[in-house]
Length: 254
Ligand code: BJW
Ligand code: ZN
Image 1: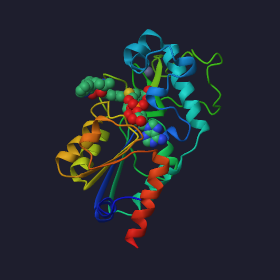
Image 2: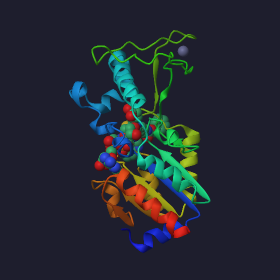
Image 3: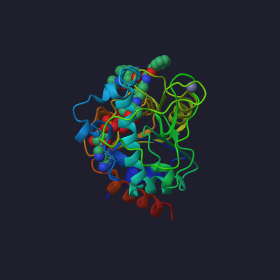
Image 4: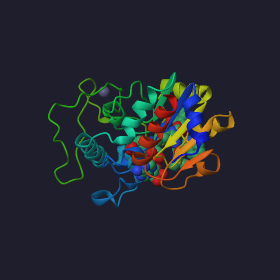
């Protein structure tokens, strides 16, 4: 059961903005960013793997890590939390779905115009000239030894192909960031779902939304720095809480 005031805020909102993080895909079987170092990768530091310096110092290792993660995503499916957000979008005049995730599970659940702040596993490009790279049709590129895989080379300049994601120290894509900021400024309700709220500037969005008067709702089984600022902290798994929450909003609108 949810408090009446929460359902009422969602029901009467004109614009709902949502920020998702790795936790929303956890129930699809994709390890969260900070859990992605399990098994073969547990001896590596994610902050190094997810950086331009890490790529330049060991390209095969970093490309292998991302290919391993891309294969995991290709084998999984959207979960009830992704579907619930696609359904919530139909209930409101303006809806902006912002994600830090590099998977495509929101799109596969039917969400449109997803704002990908940290890029995509599926859109690699040349490290030197930026030329997009198309993956071959066959998908079994997973490193045979579960670790190193040399990156492909660019057809244009022979540079190294890199994952199409935003690494630490790199700027976020300008259009996506502008879109996210506009939604943060315009929304009445801001949902922060499955993110540790540790990575900037994404973590700033719900903070600014709260300061501007939006109702901030967090869904996470663990506490984060956002707990102090969020009006509602729904402690639990997104795949369990979100479908019930959206169902309550749909019923309240009938
Ligand atoms: C569940 C669940 C369930 C589990 N249901 N929940 C200001 C202050 C301090 C530092 C900085 C700052 N500005 C910039 C920085 C530096 C840096 C930064 O933030 N560092 C921090 C570590 C302190 N930021 C940057 O470098 C950014 N760039 C930048 O600011 O550039 C400025 C610039 C301007 C002009 C020129 C040059 C530069 C870029 C940040 C890019 C982040 N990229 C990554 C990697 C992407 C590719 C990849 O995935 O490998 O994005 S880092 C990583 O963190 C990834 C994620 O998208 C992101 C957020 O992680 P997320 O989603 O929160 O996952 P987790 O694992 O942390 O948490 C999961 C949560 O789910 C947990 O809370 C669980 O409890 C929960 N959960 N199951 C619901 N079932
Ligand atoms: Zn190139």
